[in-house]
Image 1 (cartoon, rainbow, N blue to C red):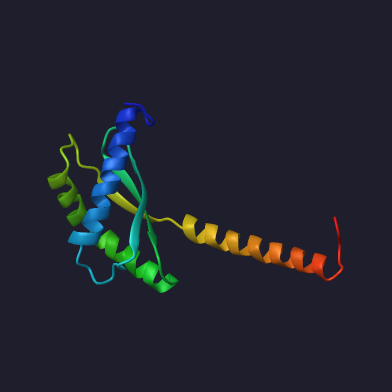
Image 2: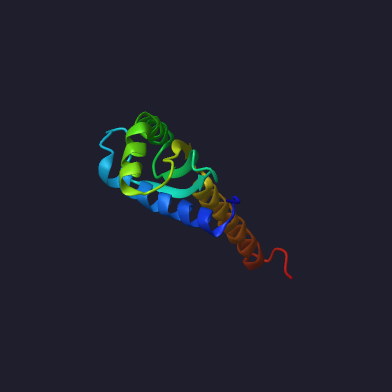
Length: 129
């Protein structure tokens, strides 16, 4: 099975859906922030390993605690995933903090600030087009 095959894409999306439910409903670790989202999943073609990219809405301390809680709960989450999905192998889970949403929000804010500055210059008699 190639990495980008239809089967691999389907497995990735199914694992993502199930992991979202497991994190939301089954993991009771108080360190895991309630606003934790599974952004994407990469399962190796041999189904041995899975990288779970998660996003946490909160400050750096909450993100750190959530990642710690997820890493401690990985074996339990793997058992739950095995019960929910009929896979030949249940992948070993690795949780990775996804900072793409945070980065996108920061870039959007910077663009808005630059746009606001440039329109402010045009209104004040600054540089015209």
